Length: 622
Image (cartoon, rainbow, N blue to C red):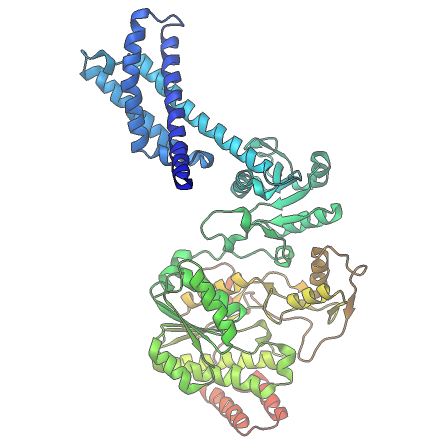
C-alpha cells in the first residue's frame, strides 16, 4: 500500500508542473488574442483560436522537453537556466512563423504572426515567473521551518561575486537560520544599490552604525581574497560591539570557483596578520610540470608535507609516493587523499625513515620518481638544542644520502624545504638546514643529472610545534600565554602558501638555487598572542595574562630573510627570489660532511658535534 502511495506521490509531483505550464500557455494565448483584437475578439476567431492553441501548445511543450526545461527543479531555478527557456520558446516561435508562411491553407497550424509573437513573450515570462515565485515560497517555507527562533539578522561585508553567492546560499538554505539584511562595500559605485533585493548600506567604516540601525546579529566577510587590513578592521569592530564574525574561504581554498555556506568559517589568526596572501599564479605551468609525473614527498605526514601532497594530487600526477616514518600521520594523509576528488588511485603510502639507506634505495628503485620534494626534517629549535647528534644525522647526513640516492635513481628535480633560520644560523636547527643546503648545492655541481634546489621560508601558521597551537592550548587551559621576549619578531606564512612556493620553486629550478619568498613584514609575537586572545572572545592582560619568559636556547630576536637586490635576484614571480648564495668548494663541503659523519658514527660527545655544526660557514668558503 505504501509503495502504491509513494508511486502516486511521484506521479503527482511530476504531473503538477506540466499542468501549471499548460495553464500558463492557455492564459498567455488567450491574453495574446485579447490584446490582438483590442479586448473585442470576433466570434469566428474564438473557434479557430482554440484549434490553433492545441497545435501551438503541443509545439511549445515539445520544444521545452527538447531543451530540458522540464528536468529543472523549480526550487533551484537560477539565471543560468533562463537561456534554456529562451531557446525553447524562440525555436517554437520560429517554427510557427515557418508554418504561417509555408502552410497557407491550414488555419489551425498558422495563427496570425502578431498573436504568435505576443504569445511567445507571455509564455516565456509566465513560465519563468511561476518558477521564481515557487522558489521564493520554498525558501520562505525553509526559513520558517528552521526552528522556533527568528533567523539571525546578518550583514555581509563585500558586495562582489562571493557576497552574491553567499547571500543566495543563505536564502536557499533556510536551515542556516540567517537572514541577510544588508551589504557593506567600500566601492562607492556599489553603495546605494541592491543585490537580490538587499541594500548595499555603506562602507566598512559604517559598520557600527549599520549594525545599530539594522539590528544586525552576525557579520560575514564575503571577499574571496579579503585584504588582511579589512579583516582586522571588521574583526576589531565586531569585537567592540560583541558580534560573532565569520569569513568566506581564502583564495587557495576555492579551487572550483564556488562557495557554499558550509565553507564559511570562523576568523583565524592567519586572517589578521598584517601580511597579504600571495597569489603565485602559474596554475597551468604547475599542471604541466607535475601532471603525468611520478612525485615522491618525504615527511608527507607533516604539516607542509601533507599540504604538498594535497596540492600535487590535484595537479594529476601519474604516481604520488608518500614517505613518512610516523605511521599514524601517513595513514591520515593517505585516507584524506583517497576521500577527496580526484581520489587516491595514484597515491602510494610508504612507511620509511629517510635515514635508512637500504629502504630508501629500494623505494626509489621501485617507484622511479621524477620529482622529489624533501620535507622530512627535525624542526623544533629547543628540542634540537638538546639532541644535537640526531639533528645532524637526520637533517644533514640523511639529506645528503637521499640526494645521492636520487642522483643514482635518475630523479629529475630534488627540492629541499629549508628555513630562514639557515641565515647566519644561531641554532642547531638553522645550522643543520644550512649545511644541508651546502650539501645539495655540492651534489648539484659535482654529480649532474639531478637539479637540486632549496626553498627558504619563515614560520608556518598552525604547523605542529609552532607558536599558534601553543598559544591556543594555553588560552584553552585558562593559564597565562607565554612569550619569550616583547621584541621577538618572526616571518609568518600560511600552509598553502608554503606548499605552493615549494611547487613553484621546483618548476623553476635549473639547479643549485636557494629560493626565497618575500614574506612582507615580520610580526611581533606578542601582538600575535594578543590577537589570538581576542579571537577567543577574551581580553589580553585582563582575562588572559601574557608572561615573558626569555628567549630559549638557539633563538634569535629577529630572523633574517633578505630579498633586496644585494642579496637576491628576481624571478618571473614577483614575490619569489633566488638568493645570491654561491655553492661552496667541493673539497671543503666533502671534508666537513666527512668529519660530521665520523663524529656521529663514533657517538662522539654532543659538544663536539655542536662545535662542528656551528662552525662559521665561512670555513667552507661561503
